[in-house]
Image 1 (tube, rainbow, N blue to C red):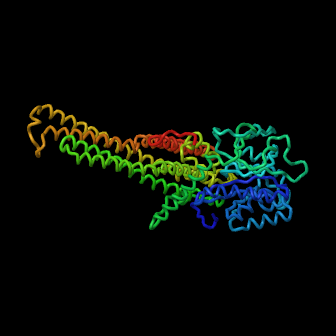
Image 2 (cartoon, rainbow, N blue to C red):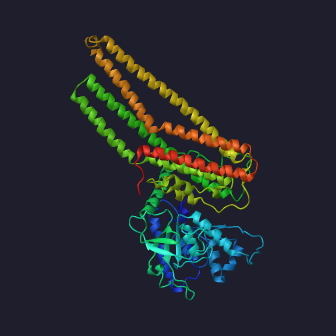
Image 3 (cartoon, rainbow, N blue to C red):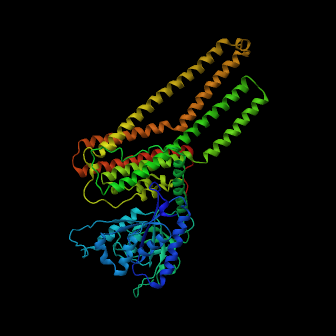
Amino acid sequence: MSNDSKNDAVSPFVVGVSGHRDLRAEDLPQLRAAVTTILRQLAEHLPDSELRITAGMATGADLLVAQTALELGFGVDALLPMPLEHYAADFDPDSFAVLKTLLGHAAVRCRELPLSTADGEPGGAIPDRDVHYAKLTQHLIRGCSLLIALWDGESSLLPGGTADTVLRYLGVRTDRNKDDERLEFSAASDNTDLPARLVYWIPTTRAREGSGLDPGSAAADVQTPCFLAGLGDNALQRLPAMPHRLEVHLRSLNVYNREYHRLKNRWPAPPAPDSLLRSLPATLQLDTHDVPVLERIDVQYSKADALALHFQKRSDHLFAFFNLVAFAMGLAYLAYEKFMSTRLLLFVYLVILTWSATVYYVLHERRWFAKHLMCRALAETLRVKFYLRLARGDQLVDAEEVLSLSGINRFHGFGWIGHVLIGVEAPAPEGGQGPGAQQGGVDLAWIENQRQYFVRKVAKLHRSGVRTKWMKRILFGVIIAVVLILLLLGERAREHLLLGIPVENALTFLIGLMAVTLASWELHQNKMANRELLWQYRNQLKHFSRASAQLARTLAAGRRLEILVALGKDSLMESYLWTIHRFHREHEPPGRA
């Protein structure tokens, strides 16, 4: 789908690019065809979403993929490893002209990573260019959901090179084994439990002499593109087709975008969405470099929050309908048993049972409740990410890692959340802590706001719990009182009439009514899981109160940032644990999918 038709609220699926610069001219048509095939395959699963390409725009593979993507109508994020005037030294005149043309394209957004040293002159040499390419690799690792690699399949120790990028992206190379040149390929079995990160490998022969695939290597056996997954240190698994999990994630992400589009179209006058930016203190001065990143996170937060509220209302109404039907069925049975033993009442009972069960399960299949949990988990993650970015500590909290640790990303329909988070990733900010880490920054805009929110919620749920206890006691007391009356009346309860009905029948009906009411109320409380919600709010209140007390006594910027990072992790994990408890109330534990 064309980039022009998209809006900022669409959550994109981001594809990174890594590849060799010295491609053989005779291979270019074949490589373009392979790139076209995978991009179109991904786009088929995202008809209502956006596919964006992130590339370092180096000569060779990067420019080839970027050109192909633009020709197909996809947007490109050009992430230059250094300012353009320094990057020019890595290009010949023809390639640099192509680069400048692409950077001027309407569908290209350009970002430059800053220099890590001050002694580079524009157009001149930078003392250690490998450092900048290694930083580009680090951003690709965090900033894309799938990596396309035009790679010869050979190992290399060059920091930021294609092999280094592929292996680090798949998690099979780290700084602890960066000097290990071994490389092992194997075919993935059908029952392999694949990791989340995947690479689409397009085997490539390099132009310089002697740089083709080694006939004795495992990579030489691969002639057609395939997917790669990490297995162990420098060990890779080959998958001939797109894994089912990736297909599910793509479809789920597309459903998320489509649901929001439908929701917006239903609004006659769209309500003002909740905004994290608007809630910041007026006295807080934002860094101009951070504003675009904060705006992207805020847009995605507003979208997730609006959908969470929408699905919460739908699921709450569905739960209320279920409880009402259960009460009506109990009432109909009591009336049949005590007052009117007619077939007509049995028929009415059967109609209520079959009709309500059909309606409930048809609506239940729309997964409103699960979607509410998904969108709420995403919104709370984006909230934490926003405030940590404000403090310039977002790179210190890997939300995907916390998701994985909680296990929530293994639940059916939750895996796409990580792709939305990747879509708002940005290079690590330069300099020290941001304005949010200062006194009166995040501690006022986020911590105190959330602390007061949880104080109100805990008090409200506590009052509701007290009322519920008293209602149960009253109902229980009524039941005991009616039983005592029946005992006192004895046989006379059958002789006396009340509106033509024996007193015994009327009183036993009242007992049954109280029991049905109590059971229906318990069912509603169980569906709403108010106990778990109160538990989560109290835990969150403890986290934010502790952080507030610590920040009030902490002045060192570095130490304040540590407190904020710890709070971010605690808050995220608390939200995910609550989501797990709520999900298990309605769904089976997650399987392999």
